[in-house]
Image (cartoon, rainbow, N blue to C red; front, side):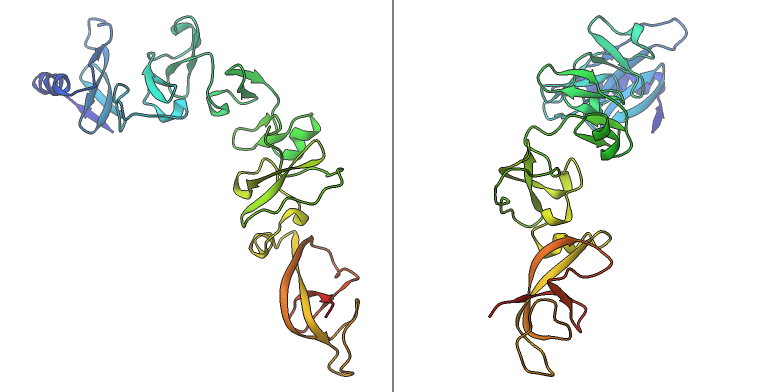
Length: 289
């Protein structure tokens, strides 16, 4: 969104800005032909100007105490995120135009510190090391398998970048410890680290890798993966309608008084040997009376 300002309107804008609390008016160098670059804060947000031509850059101003951020992308052009607050560092077109300790985020035309807050602050093929707050080289990828084949934890497919394993544990991996899976609420799975359950749960929506079907503990989560997972139910008080006898493992054509979700299994072309497919289309385990 662009606005053209006449000299009168510019003076009015400056007067308005100077009357606002928590905002300042920044002027760039004047090149003598009206192409000077400057910014100002107005009631509807932050503007970046070149001469009389001003373009809206964001809803809040860098000096606004309410202008909080998590990543540089939350800030207006010319600013970066520092300790949750947008700070001004200037505009650029390439690294050489930024001061020492800064580089140019060319996508935002903004000078940003060489450090990082999250991996989103780094280039593709780099992740943000939480210990040093610096962008560190990893690898590029298009799937979790591609990242893991190169020795990394998972693939941030949005950025096409390999990321290290989640220190809290992963949603996937082989479990070699003799442990019972951690019980988790709906929408979560038990996390794994070094082949063992960590005792904690992670949201499926935020998983580093796609969890296996057997890790899905609730019916709704399993039914949400019908492409590769199958919900298996326990049949309670199941009988053969022809003989009237209780059903046993591997029986077919049984009738059950009720069903309850038993587990989630990888989808295969046939039912497991201990289960049967009932008339209602449910894959059922016979539950002992």
